[in-house]
Image 1: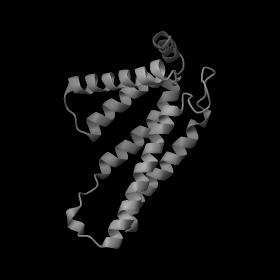
Image 2: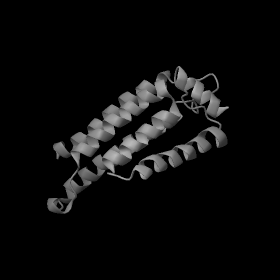
Image 3: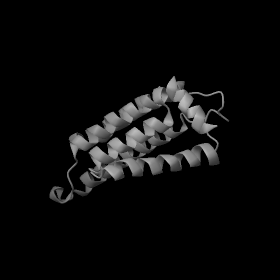
Image 4: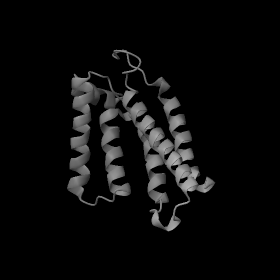
Length: 162
């Protein structure tokens, strides 16, 4: 049973570390500390922690119920590891490249590698539509500042955001 708890436990530990990394993500344009540029990464990481905790709880309950082990689907370790690594890179990339480029790349990689989407149009169109939706929700409706990046990425963000 401990082997099955290792993956969600590791994801919780990594997510907590990445959550700690978002402490430096601040903006003078933020309406409050809660709704600053780190809001979306913190939301994603909190979701990962919640899902991992639910997996641990589910495994403990399954172990207590002594269910048939052959009926459960197997964990795809490669997809899991890619998700963890790409999520960590996404949090770091947002600080340097800004929200829009980092989110586009993050979604394209996850869709291509984890969900095995092979259509080039899908790998370009779906992340673009989702990122545009996030942009409208967080920037236009909620008026939350998202990471703008550094250098040329900051200039691109300023052009798009304002």
